[in-house]
Length: 76
Image 1: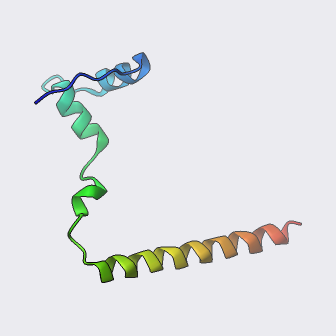
Image 2: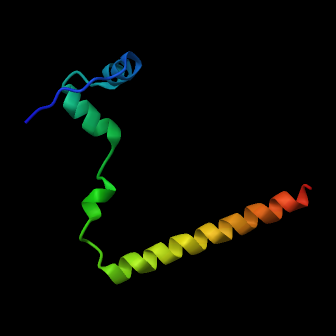
């Protein structure tokens, strides 16, 4: 199946400039957008693992916010 999409001229030109001679536009877009999507991981982790990862990310975010606040306070 194929789909038509609209691209702004500047986006089209960027893809065209990065497209290899032996590639179709679809191949170039696949290569340029990178590897797998996070959606590909759906079903890989169970709910406990997801919860644990989410908690770890939130803890890291809190630590980062605290560190930024500490640095900002030094400059006040």
